Image (cartoon, rainbow over all chains, first blue to last red; front, side):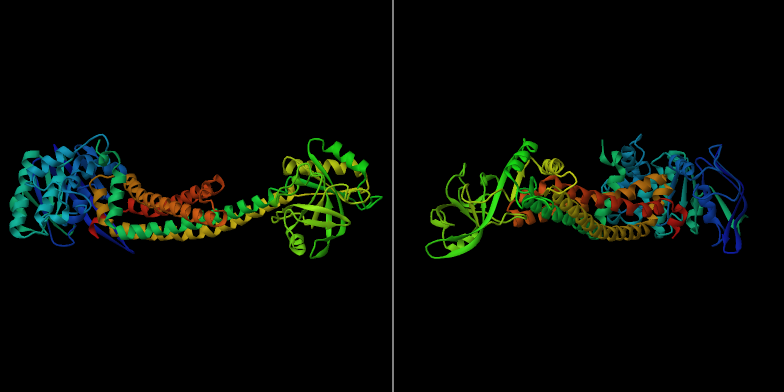
Amino acid sequence: MSVIELSDVVKRYNNGDEEIAALKGVDLAVNRGEMVAIIGPSGSGKSTLLNVIGLLDTPTEGTVTLDGQDVTDLGTDGLTDHRRESIGFVFQAYHLLPIFTAVENVAVPSMWDSTVDRTDRARELLDRVGLGERLSHKPNQLSGGQQQRVAIARALVNEPHIILADEPTGNLDQDTGATILDELTRMKNEENVAIAAVTHDEQLTNYADRTVELVDGVRR
Amino acid sequence: MDPRQRFPSVVMAWRNLWRNRLRTVLAALGIVIGVVAIAGLGITGSALRYGTAQQFSDITNQATVMPGEDADQRHLTEAQVSAIREVASNATVIPIKEGSLQASSHTAETYTRVEQVTHPSDLYSAHRGTIPQPFRTGVLLNNETAAQLNVTVGDLVIVGDQSYKVRAILAEGGIGFRSSGVVVSPPALDKQGYSSVTIIAEDGDAAQHLANATEARFNTGEEVVRTSSFGGLNQRVGSLFSTLNLVLLGIGSISLVVAGVSILNIMLMSTIERRSEIGVLRAVGVRRQDVLRMILTEATLLGLIGGAVGAALSALIGAVLYNALYSSPMLVFRWASARYLLIGFGFGAFASVLSGIYPAWKAANKRPVEAIRS
């Protein structure tokens, strides 16, 4: 069964008087253990697509199904809960909190959830991405590649079904980008998680099981 | 359990405040100033009131009875004094005769008001020497007469045609103190009747009540006697100071409003600066109400810190004030003063939380997509 399934998704924005359609009827399904690269020129709607997959944005038309459940019309808080429970995020600019150590940053998604303590899992994940020696380092004491690995650990801390990666190698040089992609691929297999990555990076498409190209709001 | 797990909002808020220490200190300083304004002015008002109440306390329990407009004589008769004693059977009744006589010593002489009283210790206190009890011989002088006659305790003076030993120099001061130059014991004044009768009751209310009862006893349509008491004065002064304190608190509140606005401004700036961080929190599944709680906690911590420092400073200022006025710094912890410390602290914390609501609400409801992208 697909982790996430989009069917005939349309997303329109109001830009003043003008209505702009960013997505014009997109079907997409991503399965567990699969990495899908989403490519396309600027303005093709790939970021919008990623936001819809990540439940950060809701479609104007069409349906979104997460683990077989229709989540299209959930409210803000319902979507937030689903993101916390089932989805991990990796951003181009890492977006770690400067006030927290590596372990704390990894544990952030469940920080307000008093029913679980993910500190042990956070330590274990950091160990697995090769940062076992830097658990107490703050982001400003880590290199870009190390910060992105902390971000990967954070994306995995809630045992998600899918990870959304927005240009995960965009701020890194070629070699560091390659190690990050190795890491993502390894984690994908170990955790049996789906990955959807938006990218300009040719390198990333080589790691992907499948590439989806978006042009002007439709798949090609 | 790990405090991060138990109080995530507090940990988060504290670290964010710590991250911008200078800004945090400046924001808290606004609250400190506001709290000092409220508590400091309130304590100043209560200190002044305390001093005034001290001055009044000697006379507020007294009522004076004098001949009225329609009295047959210009004095109170023995029979009337007996009637007053009946009315005020629980209180001390002191009939007073007054006259003007020549007083002289070896070196000087003066013409002065003389008061004849049986129990002067109820009306006066001694500045030097002691007031005899019972009072049968000698005289008591006020400062002015003693200075004019150039005499002190133990010297001899002549009042009228009699020679007396000076027993005490009377203490003066306070509002309503008696101003006779010489106090003598009966039967020095050869006069019929009494110029007034002073009733000393338990407290201001009792004095007021006895004054009313005396008037009711004598005045049936005509004003045979007139009474005055200070019980009402005490109340009027009390309400005057209440108004004064309200005005002072109002002035103090303005500075707290200013402090609140500055916190609002600082919190708004800080949440705008952190909008991508907050967006990431929201994206990874932190609920809106948790973001709201986190930022409100920041404002609350600012208010608590500012309020506590402000209250401590105000207590210090109050102690210095009480020390200067009454040489007794600990009086600042009387409830009448100390409550302004609590009021100031409460207002400070409240203003701070209030100012945090809008920035917190705004940050919590920002869409994560916009926050991360921008």
